[in-house]
Length: 600
Image (cartoon, rainbow, N blue to C red):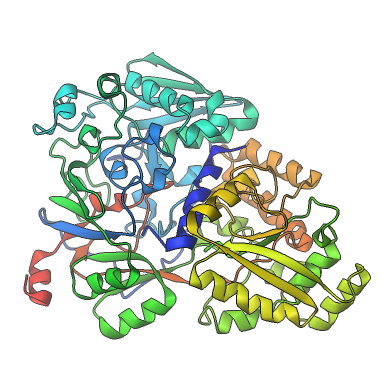
């Protein structure tokens, strides 16, 4: 079971609160044996073009968070992608490649997190790596990278701005795969053998069947200085934060704010564009404002108390465009976790029968939901993955699917009744469905409830508050059916959507030998030939969708909004696996334009 599944936590946090809303090389020196994607597609940002103005230094940007940072020490906390300050202060061996995003070739949008493909990576603390099949990866540590030195911090003075070495990487990674509260320790990365071959070389060995978890070791594991852990035990106190990142955490007030200042000793230069070769970061700082209430976040954007707002729901986007037409925006799609998953592993439940599952699909009027609940621009085929530019070659469009799949997405209550009768349920049955108590979730399943009633299915909705819902999901403590998932799209090669039984993936409890076979085929080549792995996934979707293992959610668009004075920003969210807000090291403030627009 792949540890990346643990990040399904983020998927549920998006459902519950619509939250969340590194490192490039000067020259691309990363060595892998994988095929590199060369097709360039058009970015989806609206009203934006690549800025040709030379970047300027100075200024601070303000970003709204829906919650406090969940950890300052990744070995002591599960919530990697909500370790908001850690993702700017500490770094990984590899990261997402800024050069293939909207600022460069446009192959990636970087609009969502959890993009784990090897062909989207570049070097960070490791300037390059070698993939040695079938079980070994060698990381070559970059020279000249130093820890930030904050004279006001005792922990920082302890490290004293020294250079980052292979031993630091080995210590950190071993902590992450052994500490019980670390997300990484829950997966197959715990099987890794990690050694420092010399001061600049890290060797990691994993069993061949777990080899893709090398990406977790590379772009999910924030690294630090051993002496901090050795003196303080851990870095759960924010004052012990020390890293190699572009910013330094200088102040944190729970339920209020976190302030990060520029690391003047940062190693990286801008790899592309009019600022190519200039020292990063451009900003003097980043200020996180912790604003749980949605209406308050929207007001903060409208009044320019914050410079950007990520993950805006489509209805709120319409309102923002009316009140603040000067805002720039990017439309994107991210799974919102509203799929209905009914257990297929229990012989006493109706869902074991494929006729019942197909009937549920045909009893769902996806087009009506798209045009009402989802505003008309939603994706209908959204399980197990929805369409994203970065994974487009793994996605099976409905028009390319077999007719037996296409008919599942056509509203046909009469045929649904026929199938239910053939399955032995001529009068229908009752389904108990556990879901989040969020109004948007209840609204969605209530629409489905009304549709299913027409074919004799009585849907009993059982809402649960956030913490309880998360516990039920991850403990798989539901008897019949649950709303949620799927897991982050980066887990597609793991087959987490339809294999395994841990951490909230495979919520319908599928156990199909063809699914396991497809997963094994993808994992064997995911690092060395991701294009071929994508092709296997796309072909297998003809079978997966035909099985109707889950009733997909109609997924509406979301948006990132920002003011025009925020430059070298194009609607990015995470440059890498789940490094939220690490685009800030490339962004800069046009202070003249800001003053012209709002007088300050």
